[in-house]
Length: 141
Image 1: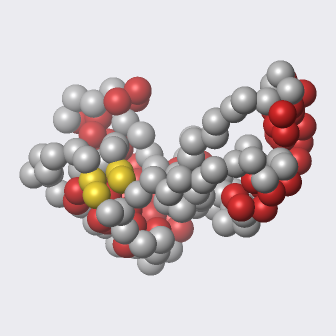
Image 2: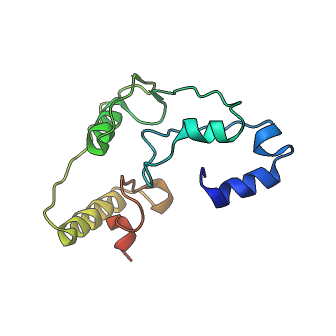
């Protein structure tokens, strides 16, 4: 959202615009910056008149401790200061592959296993640290 065409829409839609309007923007710009690491939040705030205050949020509220730790290792982006969810005892299963074709096979197998366990489409989310142009899940039909 912090790109030119999106900012133009936000600026036009906000009473007073981005410079004079009253607004808040929440995001995990470290652990969820999966599409482009070039977002410079400080520069964005300066461009909007310097009136922004940035707070770093370093707590993970969504994942279990085991999933949060694995996501940070896999994404190579450092850890969280705290994970708010209780440890539910479930451990992520890691599967390794040597090719895109093998990764596709493993992902399909994992989805089949979830389906066999009774999970339906809306109950399953496939997350990736890669954008849609290189994410293997996007290559499946």
